[in-house]
Image 1 (spheres, rainbow, N blue to C red):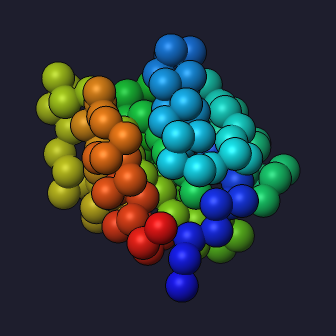
Image 2 (image 1 turned 45 degrees about the vertical axis):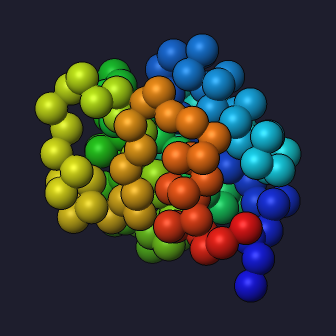
Amino acid sequence: MAVNLALKILVVDDYTTIRRITRNTLTQLGFSDIVEATDGSSALGTLREQRIGLVLSDWVMEPMTGLALLRAMRADAKLAGIPFVMLTSGSHQEDPAVAKEAGAGALLVKPFTTVSLKQALTSVLGPF
């Protein structure tokens, strides 16, 4: 079954430029319903207000990290099943095993290419 390109995607990053690049790359892949949040706590508000089909979140943000967001989502029955891709700069010492244990479907190192983003999305959503 093909991925629904009408899926609403939430991009969470504290840097406007990264959100814009991620949005543009998702658009290149055929997605068009993309919303943004600047940190984990604002993302939780969006997740509770809107029907989100996928979260792409930076790991290192303040005041609520991507890992804290992921853990909060997995602890909430209404949000637990939403696919999650963790974004990391690679310069930090994030442990991929920690993200996987918390429930991330994929870990993607920034800067990423269209091809690597598509691979990460395919791993959590299926082929498209």
